[in-house]
Image (tube, rainbow, N blue to C red; front, side, top):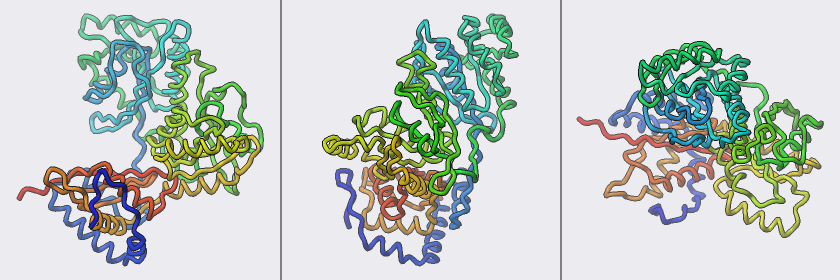
Length: 504
């Protein structure tokens, strides 16, 4: 029996294992999985565990998707206490809080709950304040947040009062159809209430006086939030049926808009040598390979916001916005330039979003032999963590090999939708743990009690264990899942639930 230690490479896939799983008696596999499931009753399980186990079954089409949680965005100019309010709502210190404007670098999503209602909280920020660009920066940030939210908390520092920047944002907020709640922060006691009342002048209705630092008034604010948030998000909802949704991503000027135009067969999007000419994600229904697809073209908004440091932040916001509406991402990489940190960041955003992934190497017609050697080396070194993603070598400008894009998209989406029956998954786990047991740690050897696929889109597996599994052992399981079941083009998540035996 080979032991899998953290310093070992993953053992090669045994052909006999593939054969055994292929010839598996499905009825017997179901019976064995049911026995393992019954054995879990000897362990301490919580309500969430039981819900998960009830939802897991043999019917591949029986996966239920939870409704999309409503989204609440927090916007405001720098240093008004947005991150402190996020921490107060979450009840824990998650967001970075510093007495420096603009320390929030990324749009960050958190899962929040109030009075048994769950929602997604979006903390925004990240612009670099400067005298010229601040108004435009705050407005653009608020605009993006509103696009992606069901309701907005607009935070103002009551001790400073309404500034010209606040009024700049308010003009834009008044035009939106989304509910906006005005939050007057830093009202630490009753003596400061008049400062909050002065914000009625902004014309956004009643200012809700709170102290994010001390918690004063936050409960009343959240009660108000629940009255305007829908039960199911209108912006992040799961669309069923219709064309599959494809986000075209990539750093500025790699040819995203050219790709969209070429697939559409006409000039649908402005193409300009200047990087960052696309501001909003553009949705286009396109016929490709005999099927209709909904393509989403994205880029930065540097032309709109005159802030060089802040530009990547806004590009990231738009990329995240596109990913939330997409099912699969085509990341376009310019082969004439070295693979950059920005390319890797965009791929990481796709992985974090859990969307399917296709890599499109663009400008292939401009590649010479020397650059090709370096490119292959870069791909091997920098993109080994996504070697499971389908790869297409294309020229968006000439249309070369664009027909290969459709099979790659279909393969990635099929993997993303894949569901492994519980019996077959547990048979695989039994084989893997018999051949390559988890290393002993601290005198104990963690055991896998039962496994199930909690969801697809992306495929997410949950392992009930007696102890913590080393990251490399989980990678070993993930690799075997890919080798045996494919999953080309889809990220795979393997989560653990460590459970203790019930006390008799």
